[in-house]
Length: 597
Image 1 (cartoon, rainbow, N blue to C red):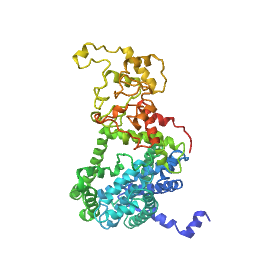
Image 2 (cartoon, helix red, strand yellow; image 1 turned 90 degrees about the vertical axis):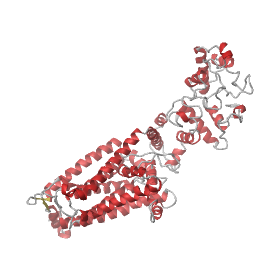
Image 3 (cartoon, rainbow, N blue to C red; image 1 turned 180 degrees about the horizontal axis):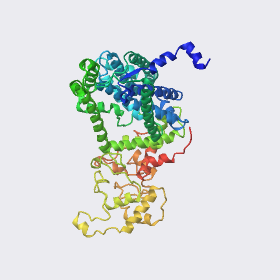
Image 4 (tube, rainbow, N blue to C red; image 1 turned 135 degrees about the vertical axis):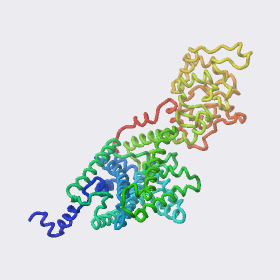
């Protein structure tokens, strides 16, 4: 007795399998019938890859990001498993949409197949539920902020919204409980519901078979095996080729920096929720419920009632009155998706935000390779001077100062642009035109420092004005750049030139010809220590003198010694020094040693 015979004698699998494979297909095998089978096989792949991911995933706010980073970057073949799971989920959304559209176009929901149609709509809802619960699980910026938007919409639903939101979040804000509940829904509840829906759909299929489209030659019939099964496997193979390619291109799946609830982030939902996101913009304020609840509810009701609206078989053009809303929904969704993507592509502020987010992600991955502390990935990032410095700058400095692409628009900046601060080029610009808008032209110090090359406005003074030679400018600027780098500069031509041309107002080693002047100290100018002194107390004399804090100098820089800790002031000063001199976050990230955790 063969193993197959032994097994069949005990479970009797051959007869049901034969009946399934011999299932007649009225009108013959066709591409239109592959989507349901392809969905089932792809769900199987999702279940297998999901189970493998569960073996390394740790569902808590302090461990989730690091465990996903471990899967994606250090676990053998982890990136491939995660990539297949992630992009397979995207493919599921596409396949189920095609499956629903195919059934509608073929009218395969008419009696007696209404239950099968309802089950298919249930599959669509569960697959979107998988997306909703799965996207936040990495606990990165994208997943966290997307979940905040989605649960916020959930909470705005009248009557049940608040209760449902609390049930999902598990408190007043997203955290450990949110992640645990989403994970439970994702790996236990939704798979159980999906299994029931698939079993019921299969039973309906076995009872009613394929619903042939209008005009099909019902005199022709194929069996499920081999032709239709072959078409299904071919469709799945093509989908897997695309999924493998996407996983290889991304080396797994996207993973942004760890979720930070106090950061600025331009949240965007996954592409399949983007039409709804864009639709909200047409309904501001309290009208938003029309977009988030009203219209989706109407669409759901229309789909549920479609078998009873479209009851008469016939060619597609005769059924257009019943199916016109379905076409409009499809075209509207594609149009809104395209509008949202194009708008973001043209939005310079959004693109800058994306670039900053990418740099933060690169830094987080570089730090992960050095090891994640027990406090979690967010603590790892917050303890990093480079990241902490940027966060402090955005919070405390960027409302007045610009620095590269951070800070207010050029027309709104009210303090000197720090891009290039501490360099020879920046010093030369100040010598030539200190009152330029991007330097001191919009500050309380406007018109305090004369230009070294432009004659003064006073006609009498202009008559005796002699512009500083280019060589002298170069000498002074080179000395100042050396001070920023921490070079002594004692006895150099630059120091001598500064004593001759600058100390009538400026201080050098605390000495000046004008004790009431508000001009800054030039010894150590723009060094880390000088910047730290300026941040701590701009009137301490270590950077600017007490006169710089005079009440009549409205809008001068405030002191941060009470607002920021000493360690934060050091971190911020070092960050401004590096970024001002053009050391980008990418450069710093690239310098991080490549160690395995």
